[in-house]
Length: 229
Picture 1: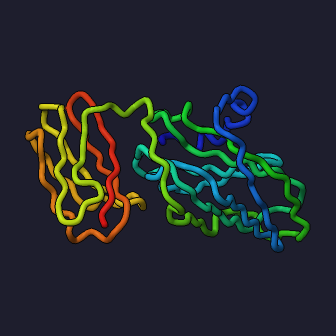
Picture 2: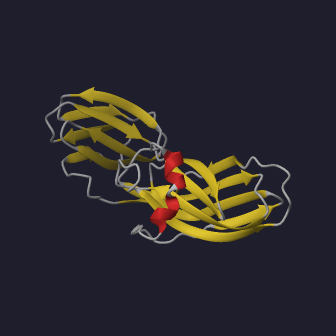
Picture 3: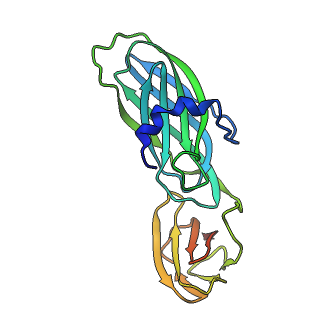
């Protein structure tokens, strides 16, 4: 997402007109001296989300932007997210959390206001350099819920599922294709290019669990899940 600092400056202009279509989330704020700890628990996000947290204080609003640097998968799962802000000035504030969501790319229409919470800093802060002191994102929790979103086309199959040693990937697209396999933390475990409609991939060295198959062709992109026993 480009020009993020400029976007944070104009966030107030988008609040009243933003139609997110996403359910509100609960933002929790804990204050210790001049240190603020913001966190969300059990939020539903895309399985491939990998957030880079950004914060900015403008007037009495602290903007917490959860900028997604991960890969878009055809599934959702549950995360806990947090950011720590040091050297907060004294006063009453509102924390507003935003995150980047589908559709991609943007840079602005995909940024969603998901929740706000008030907080107060009582301790006088002798410093003026407000800054992010840390961030946290849990691993994907629970069993992901897979959905066929508007950007996913039919035309891909994986057999067997669940797999043990090998999988057979069949894609109707006859063009050159890049095939990638990801784990649920968004790590790319395998990548190769093929012209074949059918490919055999060795997954015997993968730990038991759920994986995401991503196929990118000249005219379409496909997502599918499979599991290994």
